[in-house]
Length: 162
Image (cartoon, rainbow, N blue to C red; front, side, top):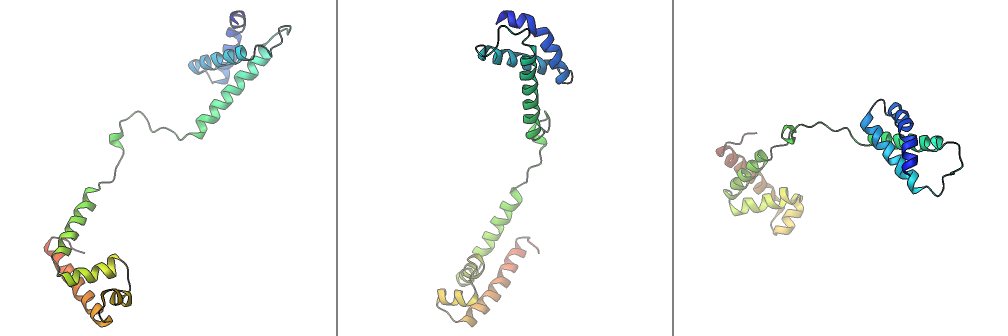
């Protein structure tokens, strides 16, 4: 194996440097991988062959092609900059709106909270809400109207405007 390395390292490296467009570090890695594969396949290599360079060159070329395909399959990296520069959505605003709406709902009467819970939060129709609550459809309609109106006033008192 060491004789193989001494004999073919220089010519193989020169060949691979051309394949890697002058990237010597990548070429060294490819030559090393090629030699490892030659060592693993030593029982299949013909010791009587005049040169193993064609076999080594083919293996090296395939390694370079595979690496290029692997690099092309991955998304490009954005750089070495810290992740602090990546914009992240600020969820604090949404959380504050939830707290304000929750407080405004608590300011409503129990009947208004109940009707908004059934019609808006549980997405029930007026008829379904009337059936669940056991009250007439007309009462559901008027409670929804006055509950939404009271909620709007409670939200405006807390600084929320539409």
